[in-house]
Length: 150
Image (tube, rainbow, N blue to C red):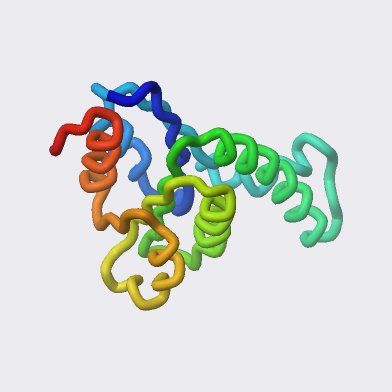
């Protein structure tokens, strides 16, 4: 049995997939972190904290820099990184987080639908597992933590 595992859940923020993974792992010694999933709070954190910007570029940049502090800190401290590519929206941030995880030598699990396989072939090649469901992610984590299947 491994010791406490810290898992960063990166990627798509428009569904409750993180809650599903966490619920399926409730009996494991695992803690989860991830990005701010309130889209407006994430987009506006920079100007809310550091003051308004009339130019949208600088508005977004302030938010991106503050979100970058959070992402670098939590992803950097994680034992495993799970990146979900969802059905909705282009998710460049998810690919960026996967690249950071790989560059840091973090074990990477990608969660994606089969129709993304071709588009994500390079990301998938860097991953140690490609899962199709939250259940598969939870089962991977269960196996890593306990050595048990299912």
